[in-house]
Length: 213
Image 1 (cartoon, one colour):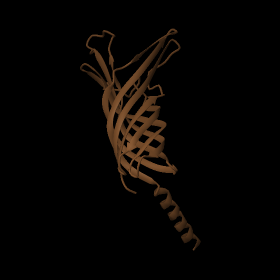
Image 2 (cartoon, rainbow, N blue to C red):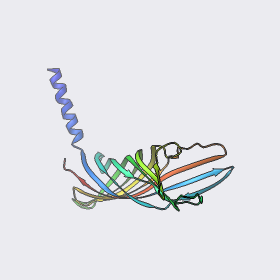
Image 3 (spheres, rainbow, N blue to C red):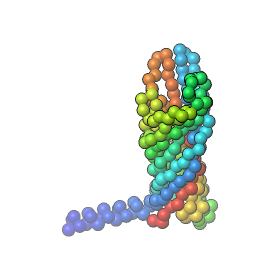
Image 4 (cartoon, one colour):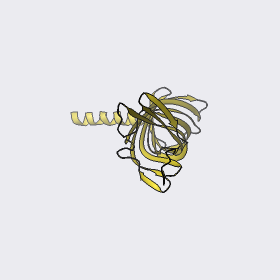
């Protein structure tokens, strides 16, 4: 009898917890960029690449933790990267080098929602963004190579994401987000004489559909 009672209580608790969680799908446009800073013998210089277009798509959850306060994790396939002008003068290498890494990305935002009407809310929030590189390439002219390798990019990336948007109806959501990379993704060797710091940046526009509970 005690086991039946505990099973019933556990079932009620799980149902109550998940009744506050909504699941959905999301996809959109990425405008990706990268910044590189190199230090040599006490002198340093930085370069920001040209923005490239990519995409993201995946799943989103929305869990209410207090009145108007939510946790909003997302699991996305997300394209990042940038295009840099090649100034090395190396024969056979194109004038531009384009990096296109793709990540499995997990941003976890704490979001405040403000109701405008019974069916419309605006929201804003921020939180950490964890990412793991799964594939991608670096291309210059006719040359192409895997971007995740020794002297390439590390697979792990970490940043801080800022998010804002609007729930147009109970099910339709539109949002924008900006992710500032905090990790150095460069996988090459850094010495006391030379060091390289390479970081991702990303602006995204998303449209999502939230399923009913």
